[in-house]
Image (cartoon, rainbow, N blue to C red; front, side):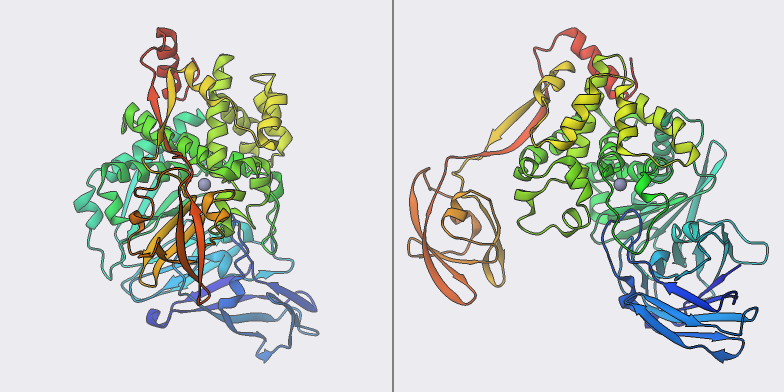
Length: 574
Ligand SMILES: [Zn+2]
């Protein structure tokens, strides 16, 4: 069995020493470092942090040939049966849920960025050992090994293991007999118990949220037999990454202190916890098994992320920790963002899923005009699917449970057609409608579906004319951040990065001076700078546009719609 030894050395050097020990079994051995980590669809080329690779067999150094940027071949001729050591170091200076970070305060390691894939050892069990400062603890979502350290049943389980190390406090609770650990790194050198002082009910609220996830799935206990939450509580940031038996969360201390921020935090917890079913065990066929070395097109990411993003908003409410008004606010914000994304008319939901690697994960200032997030449109289609299924006496939760029972719990990957069939089994017309919603660019009948539950979407118009651009005040000047496709700023020749200098001969200093007292149809002379050259143009304002949408109860809704709304808010079918 290969053994992985991680030595943190002096953490302030940010260098992780890795040693892999195994027995030489073949004349040649190929080694490859993953290029990405599951759940985060971007080629990250982790190899850029690797240094000092050497291989020793018996006590002799071996010849190593580089086959590619992240792959090598080791010559072991005549040494089969001898002990083999592969050694290298990794610079751990990138703090995110999918990278590695080591300093005097803590260590965090996404093992896809750390452990080489050894040819022929994908399905072998692995033992993990860690050497760390004496007052630190390792928080590892793996079973203990009788010989010391931890045991992963294969390379995939090893790579699905985030490691948090440090002098942190760890809390725990049980849910249906399943142990859950909660470890927080508060961004300081010693745990200050900021969380305990400011959010005293957090652990109980997390437990209630986790219970609500199980209830949604219609299961008595979570899919994991031992679950670890890792929270990085920092001065900013938001995000999460799902694993089979753990999740990693990043959240801002300031956000956690507001009521809306605390609710969004519980939604994030619910989201990542739900992923232990949806996407981890109930997994797209394209990720079964996972190719860690190249991008993999997954047409059904809209189901993995969109469905999860939709239901996560309900779970604080179904856990007894939110209100109907909060939920309508949150859903309304999503619908508003969706309706204000022109890119939804350019990129379909299925294309958004397929292009995750090159579009959503590499979005730039022009992205809003050419793409729509599969999280966002996926959540909108999840809402529409839920309300459509309710017309047939079913619900989204029924389909999720059926997919879990038929495919997920057996670890059978699903194809897009399996999803469509599962929805069509509850409402036959979805066999045609769902592919249409996935592949077309039009909007579903949102107003009609929302009316079913006595809700309406109300537009709010901006108070000033539309210029089709967004600017930000920067020490370098008043810089253009976004130029809307087919808008007035684009017609005036403006581009992202331009510095706005003067309007009608008056020096510009503040963003709000741009739109004030500018009638629709009125043209004004704009002086701007691009690549060090000053230019002149005429910018003509258009009529005020819708700046947001609100989801509101319809006061004229009939009693039957109110009853349907009550049922819908529970996420369960009537
Ligand atoms: Zn997710």
